[in-house]
Length: 294
Ligand SMILES: [Zn+2]
Image 1 (cartoon, protein in one colour):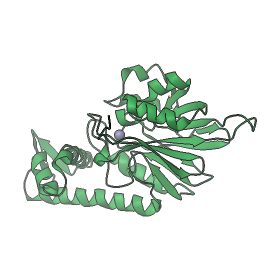
Image 2 (cartoon, protein in one colour; image 1 turned 180 degrees about the vertical axis):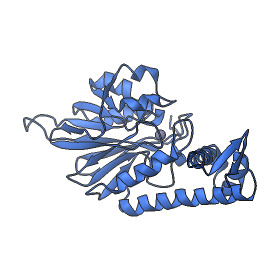
Image 3 (cartoon, rainbow, N blue to C red; image 1 turned 180 degrees about the horizontal axis):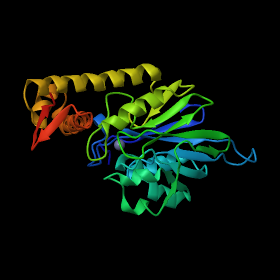
Image 4 (tube, rainbow, N blue to C red; image 1 turned 90 degrees about the vertical axis):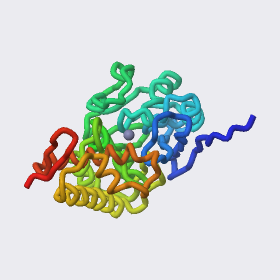
């Protein structure tokens, strides 16, 4: 019987690199901005030349069967050497255990990522640590792990300095802005991450965890930074008028501008901004009300 559910697709994004684009409608987890999550298959050089080329996987999609099958199909019989996880949210790490078991691959991530509220307990014993700054190698591929916390603790991006590619996970999306708020997020960390990613050389193209490739990376990073500061300024102005509850701020900034389904994400981002202003000594909280420090 034909299904009306959207199905995963495999997109060639560069020579030897494919994105498995996995719709989120089957999962209770609301992916960032409603954009399908992307897992990437990277092919290294075969050794010896007539053997099957080894591959790396960056992120592992959902735990659901449809997602795991789509990624397995994309591997196309090539040996999977390792699954590199940007962070441990279920749309990125959910399929890791099933894929590792099926293909005999190592699961690698920053151990800091286990602090995420959404990290599956079973991953704790399975993760082989990646140290930020470490270079990961496979069949001639070289990827440098870049610390990029803010959206989630221990978040890593992966930089290919030879081709100027950056796999950004949820640190930079292909469209829209990502949730940076409690319990996993820190806006202070996120703003530092934007600086760190912007400084990478060379930086030709970003392959994000959600949304299409970013062809003008520095422009996009600058736009995201401007957007965050614009939101902070809006919140500063509201707090300067009178004390506000987070929901009042969400209503003032977002009501009617985004689908209702995304309002919880907006609320999370408002809380993230308020906590940032508190850390900066610009705002204080009295119960549920926040006010400017004058
Ligand atoms: Zn995430």
